[in-house]
Amino acid sequence: GDLLNVCRASGVSAQIDARAVPVLPDALRALRAGHLPGGSVRNRDSVAASVDNHAGAEATAWLCDAQTSGQRECRSPGVTFSL
Image (tube, rainbow, N blue to C red; front, side, top):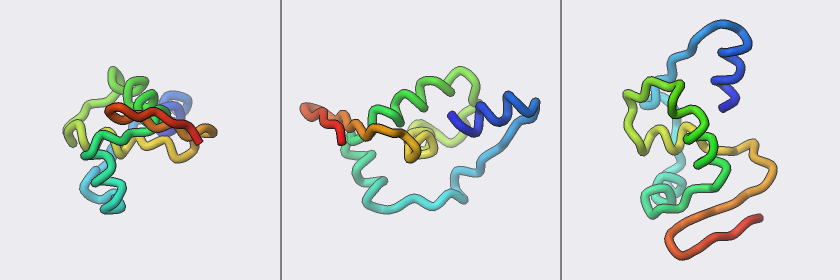
């Protein structure tokens, strides 16, 4: 979300090489288990129409991780909690 906003405001575009972005192994395992913070879901949904996604759904999910989200909310099958 932030990168898209900066690009729009600056009149430029950006390209991210998803293979070059480091991912913590436990974060990837959590994502694959269906644990995705609510802010990350909202980020992904808000940029979906504006991004040419060549990396695939899994990479898009962790590239949209809401690290700067003020409230941590996690939704997974059968579990919802906020921190």
